Every structure is written in C-alpha cells, then in structure tokens.
Amino acid sequence: MSPSPDRPEEAGAAAAEGQASEGARNGVRGPDGLLRTPLHDLERELGARMGEFAGWELPIQFSGILEEHRAVRRAAGLFDVSHMGKIAVRGREAAALLDYAATNDVARAEVGQAVYTPFCRADGGVIDDAVLYRRGEGSFLVVVNAANREKDLRHLAQLAEGFEAEVEDQTGRWGQIAVQGPEAEAILEELSEAPLHAVGSYRFLDGATVAGVSALVSRTGYTGEDGFELYADAGLVERLARAVLEAGRARGLVPAGLGARDTLRFEACLPLYGQELGEAINPLEARLGRFVKFEKGDFLGRQALERVRQEGPRRHLVGFRMVGRGIARHGYEVFRDGERAGFVTSGSYAPALDANLGLALLEGEAPLPGERLEVAIRGRRVEAEVVKLPFYRRAKAAGRGG
Amino acid sequence: MRVPEDLRYSREHEWVRLEGDGKARVGITDYAQSELGDVVYVELPEVGRHLEAGEALGVVESVKSVSDVYSPLSGRVLEVNGALAESPEKVNQDPYGEGWMIRLEPDDPAEAEKLLDAAGYRALVEAEGGS
Image 1: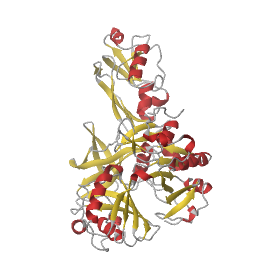
Image 2: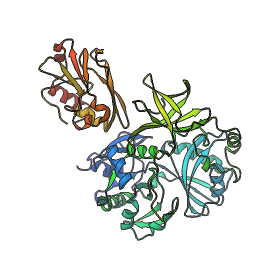
Image 3: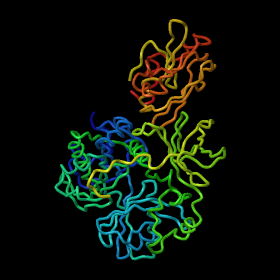
Image 4: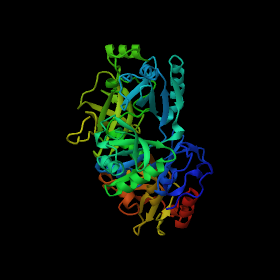
C-alpha cells in the first residue's frame, strides 16, 4: 500500500513519515467535497475502507468490523475521532453558561475533570450530548457530535449573549484519537512519562507528552472498555497515531473504524445522537436521568424535565434480544401485546455476545426483562424478548477507581 | 477479487453455476461479499417457491447493511443452504463454494446465456470502481 497520490494541495502539507507539518488543519475539504481529518493519508495507507459521515470522509473499517470489535474487547483499538466538534468556551462566566446549557452539574466540576451531559431545549428535547473538559476555572473544551457542531455553536453563542463568556469553534486546530481496550493504558504508558495509570475515569491530563507530542489525555471513550482519548495539534496527531500503532502492535492493538465504534457503543448501550437521542426525545426517556441534576441551579429544559419526572416518562428505552430469526434495525416498528408501541433506535448483531440485539423507545409502562415484544422486519412480526441493560459491561480491573 | 471462468453473473452481483444435472446453483460474488463486509444474517426462500429472474430470493445482512439478493434465473427452488443460518460467515469465506445460497430447477437453462460471462462481469466491476 502506498499513500494516495492524488492528495489535494491544501492537505499536501501533511508530510509523510509522520513529520509534524506547520499549520496542518483538521477538516480540510477533499476533491469530493468531504472534510478530511489529519489522519486521512495514514488511513489510506492502512487500507481503510472510507465512507461519509456527517460531511466527513472517515474510515468505516480496516480489517473488518467484527475483527476490530473483538480486538478492542480483547486488547485495544485505535480510532480517529477528529471529526468530533471541538468548541472552546472561555470567560469569567464560562462555567455558569455551560451549567445553564447542560443538564449535568458543570459548575462543580474541577479543573482536570470531564463531564458528560445532554444539552436540552426548553421543552426537554435533546439538542446534543457532549463531553465538557474543564481546562481552567473559566476555560472549557466542549466536544460535540460532528453532525450537530454548527447547531451547537449557534446555540451556545446565542446563550453566551447573556453571560461573560466567549464561544469559539476550534475543530480545525485539533486532531483527536481514541485508544480503547484493556491494553490501552499499558500501550500509552510505553509512550509517555505522564502518570496515566493515576488518571481516573472522566479525568484528564492537560499537556501530557505522549510520543513527543503534547496532548490532552482523558480517560473517556465510547466503547464500553477502559481507554483514553487524546487531543493534539492537528499537525502532530499523525505522529501520535503512528507511535500508538507501532507501540500497540505487540499488544494486539489494531486500527479500528466507525463501524466497530458503533457496534462497541451499541453493546455497551451508550446512546447515539440521532438514534437514542434527538430533539423529540428527552433524557429521562433515554435512561440518562443520572445526568440530569435537579438539585443544581436553573438550566435549560428544567421545568419540562421536572414535569416528566413527576408524571413519569411517557416512553422508555428498553433493550431486547431477538428470539426469532432476523436483525432489528433503526426505525423498525415494535409491538407490545399486538399494538404498535414504538420503534427500534439501534439494532445490530452484537459481536462480543453473539446475539441479535436492539434498543427501542416504547410507550406505556416500563417493560420488564422477559416481556415478549414483536419487531416488524420486512413485513413480518418477529419475536423478541426484553433483556436487562447494558447488554455488555466490562469486568473492571481490581483496584482501579470508577 | 475472484471471478471463476465457469460461472455466469448478474449485474446485481449474483453468480449461477449450471450443474451437470441441468440444475443451477446461485450465490453472491466475491466482489459482493467484499463490498458488504462481515455477513451476519442470511434469509433464504422456501423450498418449492417459484422465482422469476430478477425477483428477490432473499436478504443478506452485514453488520452495517441490508441487501436484497436477486434470482439470476427463473425457476423453482429445490434446496437452500441451511448452513448459512448458523454460519453466515461462509458467504465471506467461500462465496462460490460453501457460501452458496439456493439450488434452482431453471425454467429455461438457456436463460443463463443472457447473463454476463466472467470477462463481462470483471468489466462491470471495474466500471463500478472495484478491482
């Protein structure tokens, strides 16, 4: 394999061999009109099958989704997640602004702490879900879904008019990789003097040096495994990614694409915006109640969500296993006692569990494990059974917190 | 990409093998399985059903996609590959062998002459950007 020769001039600055290139940017538009990450050339070199996602050209798979999925559960995987939107929120009232936008408690987060939160509309619908990194008393990096970046920017900028805070899109200057799996920590520790083992869940080191590259390194991820996400200068992230691939090889790390990222998050029942979450779904329906903090101050959506809490959610996100043959897919209708009760939000073959599973948003009483459902698959109703969530939970290593 | 010389091909990436007894075996091509990625589910027709050429005979699902499989010939289904229920990965591993899908009693074996030969199919795949 050799790097693609038809590299556009703009991205040509990203030199081969992982050399840092001055001014390399994330989100350079390729000839096909799609945005490219700084790892585009590396991914081509690794034989990735590329595809479009939210306007970006991203690796869907390398060796194959099932193999990559199993490698992450067993050892480790390297993901390019540079497409995620990065929004800096800074100023004396940055924390107050984000605490008002978020349902989770942001004001009480410490510097060095990351917070997962939905952002809601006044009616409780979810605008987006995000991870907020508190980099200083008045400095946050907000990492959002690529498809929602511009909507989030408009939303936060509008809210910022009432606060002493500035909102800036920094997506272009950052590269972002995720190193996920039980071997992730050992692999990164080979590349860094920083005390990564001491970084707790949803904590981060700002400016840790990994493979000679300064990075924000957090113990976060979207796979249900232990692991880290690393944010580095767009011009340096290729050097970082190559070093991780090299150091990880002996420990079973493989490059992994968006396909495996989705099946991994699905098994772990981590919500995907546009499927489990959306403007017509509130976080209490989506089983995200623990990220809605009613005991904190006012926040967008509070009144509506308090009403939902008092009355009980009208819909429930449930997990099910197919009993009959077939795979439930996003959007398929689900029936309870013969009546249409909702739809599948995500459904797939679950590689680590070797079963056909699904998540569905259903009206009525909260279903209990064992309840029988039917999923309409190509005009047939196929039997399914409610099961406990999450489908997959990793065995935690002894002695590690959170 | 393997394109055996002794098979006939549809434009929808199915293959047909005319067997000595006048029956036909059908599956999807190496190129098709490679484009789909890991196959995790295959749905096949009932034995005895009559299919028209171009009619959906079943469905093949990879982790990320759901695709119809079309019958390249008209005929009656004599047998389906039951092993694919438990081992759909055979479609990836051996698309022209153990990954076969159905056996047909063709209405008119000469119908196969309207399908592409190996050279024609190779050209089709190249035109689609495969190799």
